Length: 311
Ligand code: AKB
Image (tube, rainbow, N blue to C red; front, side, top):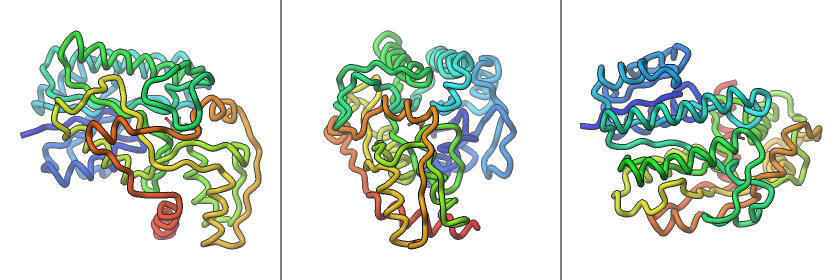
């Protein structure tokens, strides 16, 4: 019987991941934790600061945890505002979790990387699995370093750690937390509430994105794949679809014809310009049969219907 601990469960992915895991495991076997109390989680919850090894060890022993999803991190835009904190939480948090996982013989660890691990000298179109990676944001630097750590812990310590390089994740339930791709979520709320949106990226900035149901399915499929199928122990490229602010606005206008978009690029433009425009995820497809389902028009339709319900 698996007992799962989600660290950083209060973020964009945590609750959705917990509900998806709940289709496979009993509620009592999925423990949600965050540095802040989690209200109405519907699962057992604990307060854990990922820099506090004692707290993590205590919870692992209390519930006899066998799998960890370590999601606690600062994202790209907030990371640039506070690089030292981003390094501390993203790197020292990861090392702490990996060391504890080895010591307490945790069966599997999942850790999210990101397209932010790529940089300005990475090929930007159909970015391959293996290529130049020279991230120039603190978030990206922690993601690339984290990937090297994950592979190291697999090779040297035998830890079954698995990872995905998420594109921007688009979702309607939990709000995003300080990323550069967040515009692609805010745009829906503003389109439905005010029929207008001012985008902090320029109109032709193309970025790779994925819809939350695909991101969650990819995570669970990766974790469930037989060990011998997982050939990449740094992090797998993962793709959904790519679009620009102008293209998503046009898709929204098909449903809300008077929706208007304007552009006021800020410091996040430079972050987006250092990232890929599209991702080649053929290695994930080959190794564990990954295939995305949602495209831009299906995602837009589903987002509008679901956000409308909450207004
Ligand atoms: C961000 O924009 O920082 C994240 C990411 C691409 O990792 N959504």
